Length: 430
Figure 1 (cartoon, helix red, strand yellow):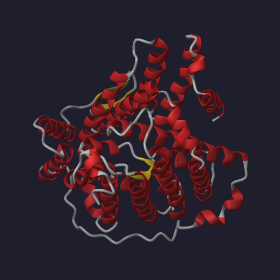
Figure 2: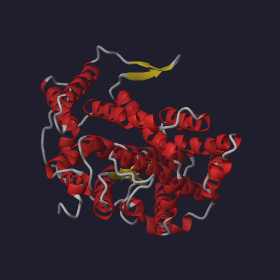
Figure 3: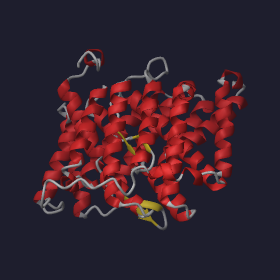
Figure 4: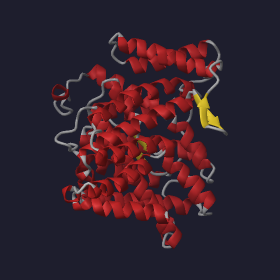
């Protein structure tokens, strides 16, 4: 087992990988609660979506752990599930069965692009400075999510955002968890992020902020309402609206996963000569999970940025992903326990992980404006647009422009010009 996952080469242990897997699972376990609620608003059965969410996370995490040896958790994407419900089903009036079929088709196209190594090629030609910017931007985005979940920053009609109510018990619990975690990290305690979440959850239950579950084991909801419906609606996707929807699912998921994979590989120290080892296998695992997830009954899956929490806790191999998958399997039976993993509990981990991920921006050539400006736009637009793909796309549009203006256009790989055209078209028409 140690040899298969290259423990010695990556300087890790069973204990460290297990703690990392638990940490990542706790950071992304909210998807089991939130995803069914969001897709239920599109008319889907909430219980069936819960089971489909867990099963797709199990399959995706196992695949990326075993095929690519990456410490990544895969689950339905938060951005794409909201797009599925509010833009496609509610906004465009497309039935969820048809929309889910669109997810399935985009997943099949993903698999084809992965087998042809087109996705891997695109990731490998991304300039090193932009890769650091992507990792840093996702760090800021993750930290912003944590701050928002902790209600340390809130919406404000005058300034868009403002500091939250520091007297709120929920905010204070998140601050407590943050302080405890960083104190343990400063003392060099392994698994500090996981222990910090556990302590915050325990304190929250003791003081009454988190409700103590009244039972431990719950029945697994049936998949019958959603399983396999995609196969009976294949004839309804050949419309201009649905083709646009399929392209959007394909586009956003492609670059969401690409951005997450780059950031996670960089954070874990796995990048070699500006390339990601086993990127093709990782992308194949991700696209396969998206296809299977659609058949089960959930929106597009993707590599979760919360995986960075496990990497910060020491995860370096696919064994971390195996632990994540195992915990999602257990969660099918112990769903009532998930209620103690509140946003106040996970927020400190996301803030700290964001800080750790953002450290990579020091490697950007800030003294070169043709590089610094696209990198900065990539970084800042991820949290401001709440989209990894949008920030990445804007950086890809600006980078060729500034490089050409500087007289360095010939240094760019031809594929970057193709991506420039694709991103401009995406913003103009979709």
